[in-house]
Length: 194
Figure 1 (cartoon, rainbow, N blue to C red):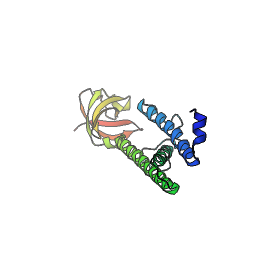
Figure 2: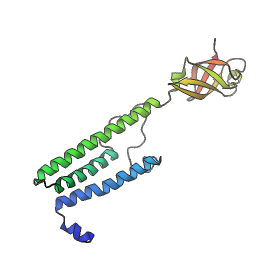
Figure 3: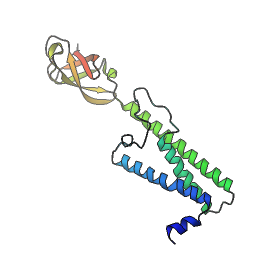
Figure 4: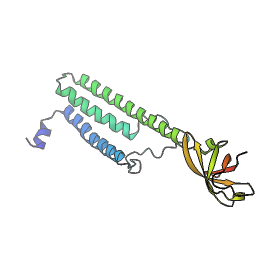
């Protein structure tokens, strides 16, 4: 039996479920492969939601492209399974497939919401370094005449960050310093630990 004969033999509801299941599954698999190889689906225009501002949090987005794809995929496949197992009432099949799709849509949105919150909690906030003690890694020139580097534990991770000082002498490698301020967006102002 060729494809056109198979397609013509299907009922309208079967065609609707197949048209929902196959393309959405294909898009879902492409998204999954892109994520597995490290490509950002947002850059490939699969998700038109745009960038997420991690500094201000992200809301729960039930109508994201990923959750809609999940709905269509599960809606289609659950409808086809219900038809295969001989559920006779079309309305029961529709209720089953819509319910399964909505549950999957909600779960997808919830998982991505949790992942964004997890990513947000790992984002470095430079202000968390203020008052902490670190060790000079590269000499810090006096009077903000250049950047040095310090190693410091911030948010439970050892990090190497740019640092300047307002002190009148260079702060040499190995000296313990205290962070007193943030300079610009990503540079620490330090002084020798007293």
